[in-house]
Amino acid sequence: MEVIIYSGIGEREVFFKRITDDIIMRRRLRLMSLHTSSPRSAEELKGLIKPDKGYLVIMDIDNCPEREKVIAEIFESYRRVKFCLVSESAEYAAESVNAGTGVCGYINALGEGLEKRFESVLMKIYDRVTTVCGGIMTFGGDGSLKIISFSDIYYIETIKQQHRCTIYHKNGTDTMRADISKLINRLDGRFEITRSSTIANLSAVRRIDDGLIFFDDDIFCSVTSKRVGEIRKIMGALTVAT
Image (cartoon, rainbow, N blue to C red):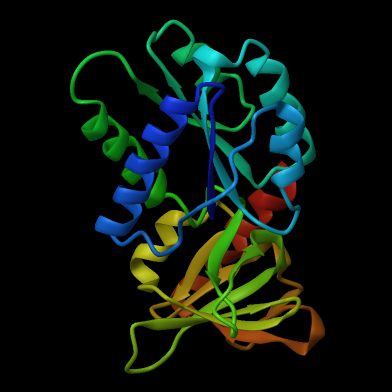
Protein backbone atom coordinates (compact mmCIF):
# COMPACT_ATOMS: atom_id res chain seq x y z
CA MET A 1 0.00 0.00 0.00
CA GLU A 2 1.42 3.35 -1.04
CA VAL A 3 0.89 6.27 1.32
CA ILE A 4 0.32 9.66 -0.35
CA ILE A 5 0.51 12.89 1.65
CA TYR A 6 -1.87 15.52 0.27
CA SER A 7 -1.56 18.99 1.77
CA GLY A 8 -1.73 22.49 0.35
CA ILE A 9 0.91 23.80 2.75
CA GLY A 10 4.53 22.88 2.09
CA GLU A 11 5.70 22.93 5.70
CA ARG A 12 2.87 20.68 6.93
CA GLU A 13 3.39 18.34 3.98
CA VAL A 14 7.09 17.93 4.80
CA PHE A 15 6.23 17.43 8.48
CA PHE A 16 3.59 14.79 7.75
CA LYS A 17 5.94 13.00 5.37
CA ARG A 18 8.67 12.91 7.98
CA ILE A 19 6.31 11.51 10.62
CA THR A 20 4.90 8.89 8.25
CA ASP A 21 8.29 7.76 6.97
CA ASP A 22 9.61 7.48 10.52
CA ILE A 23 6.65 5.34 11.61
CA ILE A 24 6.92 3.04 8.56
CA MET A 25 10.65 2.52 9.09
CA ARG A 26 10.68 2.31 12.90
CA ARG A 27 7.66 0.01 13.19
CA ARG A 28 8.72 -1.99 10.12
CA LEU A 29 5.42 -1.64 8.29
CA ARG A 30 6.54 -3.67 5.29
CA LEU A 31 3.18 -3.45 3.51
CA MET A 32 3.34 0.35 3.46
CA SER A 33 5.62 2.64 1.49
CA LEU A 34 5.68 6.43 1.30
CA HIS A 35 4.94 7.85 -2.15
CA THR A 36 7.67 10.27 -3.19
CA SER A 37 5.40 12.60 -5.17
CA SER A 38 3.70 15.63 -3.60
CA PRO A 39 0.34 16.34 -5.29
CA ARG A 40 -0.64 20.00 -5.14
CA SER A 41 -4.14 19.64 -6.55
CA ALA A 42 -6.94 17.11 -6.80
CA GLU A 43 -6.04 16.44 -10.43
CA GLU A 44 -2.42 15.72 -9.53
CA LEU A 45 -3.62 13.39 -6.78
CA LYS A 46 -5.88 11.49 -9.18
CA GLY A 47 -2.99 11.24 -11.64
CA LEU A 48 -0.88 9.34 -9.12
CA ILE A 49 -3.46 6.60 -8.54
CA LYS A 50 -3.25 3.35 -10.51
CA PRO A 51 -6.23 0.95 -10.49
CA ASP A 52 -4.19 -2.16 -9.63
CA LYS A 53 -2.59 -0.75 -6.48
CA GLY A 54 -3.77 0.07 -2.97
CA TYR A 55 -3.37 3.56 -1.50
CA LEU A 56 -3.79 5.39 1.74
CA VAL A 57 -4.15 9.13 1.20
CA ILE A 58 -3.32 11.18 4.29
CA MET A 59 -5.26 14.36 3.53
CA ASP A 60 -4.76 17.69 5.29
CA ILE A 61 -8.41 18.77 5.04
CA ASP A 62 -7.83 22.18 6.63
CA ASN A 63 -6.22 23.10 3.32
CA CYS A 64 -8.59 21.25 0.99
CA PRO A 65 -11.86 23.23 0.68
CA GLU A 66 -13.44 20.70 -1.73
CA ARG A 67 -12.46 17.66 0.34
CA GLU A 68 -15.89 15.96 0.17
CA LYS A 69 -16.00 16.22 -3.61
CA VAL A 70 -12.41 15.05 -4.05
CA ILE A 71 -12.84 12.05 -1.73
CA ALA A 72 -16.16 11.03 -3.29
CA GLU A 73 -14.83 11.24 -6.86
CA ILE A 74 -11.71 9.21 -6.12
CA PHE A 75 -13.56 6.61 -4.05
CA GLU A 76 -16.16 6.12 -6.78
CA SER A 77 -13.45 5.42 -9.37
CA TYR A 78 -10.90 3.60 -7.22
CA ARG A 79 -12.24 1.41 -4.40
CA ARG A 80 -8.71 0.45 -3.35
CA VAL A 81 -8.05 3.98 -2.13
CA LYS A 82 -8.68 4.89 1.51
CA PHE A 83 -8.35 8.22 3.28
CA CYS A 84 -6.99 9.28 6.64
CA LEU A 85 -7.96 12.88 7.37
CA VAL A 86 -5.83 15.32 9.37
CA SER A 87 -7.38 18.45 10.87
CA GLU A 88 -6.98 20.89 13.75
CA SER A 89 -10.72 20.50 14.33
CA ALA A 90 -12.78 17.42 15.13
CA GLU A 91 -15.87 19.03 13.61
CA TYR A 92 -15.98 16.80 10.54
CA ALA A 93 -14.68 13.58 12.12
CA ALA A 94 -17.91 11.63 12.65
CA GLU A 95 -19.49 12.93 9.45
CA SER A 96 -16.46 11.99 7.34
CA VAL A 97 -15.91 8.52 8.78
CA ASN A 98 -19.63 7.63 8.58
CA ALA A 99 -20.10 8.93 5.04
CA GLY A 100 -19.09 5.59 3.52
CA THR A 101 -16.64 7.12 1.05
CA GLY A 102 -13.44 5.41 2.12
CA VAL A 103 -12.43 7.45 5.18
CA CYS A 104 -10.82 5.04 7.64
CA GLY A 105 -9.01 7.40 10.02
CA TYR A 106 -9.08 10.91 11.49
CA ILE A 107 -6.11 12.59 13.20
CA ASN A 108 -6.48 15.68 15.39
CA ALA A 109 -3.52 17.90 14.49
CA LEU A 110 -4.11 20.48 17.23
CA GLY A 111 -1.86 20.67 20.28
CA GLU A 112 1.05 18.62 21.56
CA GLY A 113 1.47 14.90 21.00
CA LEU A 114 0.64 14.95 17.29
CA GLU A 115 3.32 12.42 16.42
CA LYS A 116 1.96 9.93 18.97
CA ARG A 117 -1.61 10.40 17.68
CA PHE A 118 -0.36 10.04 14.12
CA GLU A 119 1.37 6.78 14.98
CA SER A 120 -1.62 5.41 16.89
CA VAL A 121 -4.01 5.95 13.98
CA LEU A 122 -1.55 4.72 11.35
CA MET A 123 -0.90 1.53 13.31
CA LYS A 124 -4.63 0.83 13.61
CA ILE A 125 -5.00 1.29 9.86
CA TYR A 126 -2.02 -1.01 9.26
CA ASP A 127 -3.64 -3.70 11.39
CA ARG A 128 -6.41 -3.75 8.79
CA VAL A 129 -4.18 -3.30 5.77
CA THR A 130 -5.03 -6.71 4.32
CA THR A 131 -8.70 -5.80 4.17
CA VAL A 132 -8.68 -2.05 3.75
CA CYS A 133 -8.34 -2.37 -0.01
CA GLY A 134 -10.82 -5.20 -0.53
CA GLY A 135 -8.17 -7.85 -0.90
CA ILE A 136 -5.09 -9.54 0.49
CA MET A 137 -1.87 -7.60 0.07
CA THR A 138 1.27 -9.63 -0.52
CA PHE A 139 4.56 -9.50 -2.44
CA GLY A 140 5.01 -10.78 -5.99
CA GLY A 141 7.95 -12.88 -7.13
CA ASP A 142 9.86 -9.75 -8.13
CA GLY A 143 9.38 -8.21 -4.69
CA SER A 144 6.64 -5.81 -5.80
CA LEU A 145 3.54 -5.28 -3.67
CA LYS A 146 0.34 -6.75 -5.11
CA ILE A 147 -3.30 -7.06 -4.12
CA ILE A 148 -5.35 -10.22 -4.61
CA SER A 149 -9.01 -9.29 -4.64
CA PHE A 150 -11.26 -11.19 -2.21
CA SER A 151 -13.58 -12.08 -5.07
CA ASP A 152 -10.69 -13.75 -6.95
CA ILE A 153 -9.66 -16.01 -4.09
CA TYR A 154 -10.72 -19.67 -3.98
CA TYR A 155 -9.02 -20.77 -0.78
CA ILE A 156 -5.99 -20.20 1.44
CA GLU A 157 -3.96 -23.04 2.90
CA THR A 158 -1.12 -23.28 5.42
CA ILE A 159 2.25 -24.43 4.10
CA LYS A 160 3.36 -27.21 6.42
CA GLN A 161 6.15 -26.42 8.90
CA GLN A 162 6.26 -22.80 7.75
CA HIS A 163 4.61 -19.60 8.98
CA ARG A 164 3.31 -19.02 5.47
CA CYS A 165 0.15 -19.66 3.47
CA THR A 166 -0.58 -20.34 -0.19
CA ILE A 167 -3.39 -18.30 -1.75
CA TYR A 168 -5.18 -20.14 -4.57
CA HIS A 169 -6.96 -17.63 -6.81
CA LYS A 170 -8.28 -17.08 -10.32
CA ASN A 171 -4.91 -15.94 -11.64
CA GLY A 172 -2.74 -18.65 -10.08
CA THR A 173 -1.13 -18.89 -6.65
CA ASP A 174 0.79 -16.60 -4.30
CA THR A 175 2.24 -16.97 -0.85
CA MET A 176 2.18 -14.72 2.19
CA ARG A 177 3.39 -14.78 5.78
CA ALA A 178 0.32 -15.35 7.95
CA ASP A 179 -1.32 -17.53 10.58
CA ILE A 180 -4.66 -19.02 9.48
CA SER A 181 -6.27 -18.48 12.90
CA LYS A 182 -5.42 -14.76 12.79
CA LEU A 183 -5.90 -14.23 9.07
CA ILE A 184 -9.58 -15.22 9.22
CA ASN A 185 -10.28 -12.13 11.36
CA ARG A 186 -9.01 -9.88 8.57
CA LEU A 187 -11.26 -11.35 5.89
CA ASP A 188 -14.94 -10.64 5.27
CA GLY A 189 -18.05 -12.80 5.72
CA ARG A 190 -17.45 -14.86 2.60
CA PHE A 191 -14.54 -16.69 4.19
CA GLU A 192 -14.70 -19.57 6.66
CA ILE A 193 -12.22 -22.02 8.14
CA THR A 194 -13.03 -25.44 6.66
CA ARG A 195 -10.28 -27.24 8.57
CA SER A 196 -7.46 -26.13 10.85
CA SER A 197 -5.16 -25.41 7.90
CA THR A 198 -7.62 -24.03 5.34
CA ILE A 199 -9.83 -20.99 4.73
CA ALA A 200 -12.30 -21.10 1.82
CA ASN A 201 -14.21 -18.39 -0.02
CA LEU A 202 -17.72 -19.82 0.27
CA SER A 203 -19.12 -17.44 -2.34
CA ALA A 204 -16.90 -19.14 -4.94
CA VAL A 205 -17.88 -22.75 -4.07
CA ARG A 206 -19.52 -24.77 -6.84
CA ARG A 207 -20.26 -27.95 -4.87
CA ILE A 208 -19.30 -29.98 -1.80
CA ASP A 209 -18.77 -33.68 -2.32
CA ASP A 210 -17.12 -36.41 -0.25
CA GLY A 211 -15.17 -34.12 2.07
CA LEU A 212 -14.03 -31.81 -0.71
CA ILE A 213 -15.06 -28.28 -1.66
CA PHE A 214 -14.93 -27.63 -5.41
CA PHE A 215 -14.39 -24.30 -7.17
CA ASP A 216 -13.99 -23.35 -10.84
CA ASP A 217 -10.96 -24.48 -12.86
CA ASP A 218 -10.99 -27.95 -11.21
CA ILE A 219 -9.63 -26.45 -7.98
CA PHE A 220 -10.66 -27.96 -4.65
CA CYS A 221 -9.80 -28.01 -0.95
CA SER A 222 -10.75 -30.15 2.05
CA VAL A 223 -13.47 -29.68 4.65
CA THR A 224 -13.84 -31.70 7.86
CA SER A 225 -17.02 -33.73 8.32
CA LYS A 226 -17.85 -31.74 11.47
CA ARG A 227 -17.91 -28.49 9.51
CA VAL A 228 -19.85 -29.57 6.42
CA GLY A 229 -23.31 -28.88 7.86
CA GLU A 230 -22.39 -25.43 9.16
CA ILE A 231 -20.57 -24.57 5.93
CA ARG A 232 -23.68 -25.41 3.91
CA LYS A 233 -25.83 -23.20 6.16
CA ILE A 234 -23.44 -20.27 5.75
CA MET A 235 -23.42 -20.77 1.98
CA GLY A 236 -27.22 -20.71 1.99
CA ALA A 237 -27.23 -17.46 3.96
CA LEU A 238 -24.74 -15.91 1.53
CA THR A 239 -26.94 -16.90 -1.42
CA VAL A 240 -30.00 -15.27 0.18
CA ALA A 241 -28.01 -12.11 0.99
CA THR A 242 -26.89 -11.70 -2.60
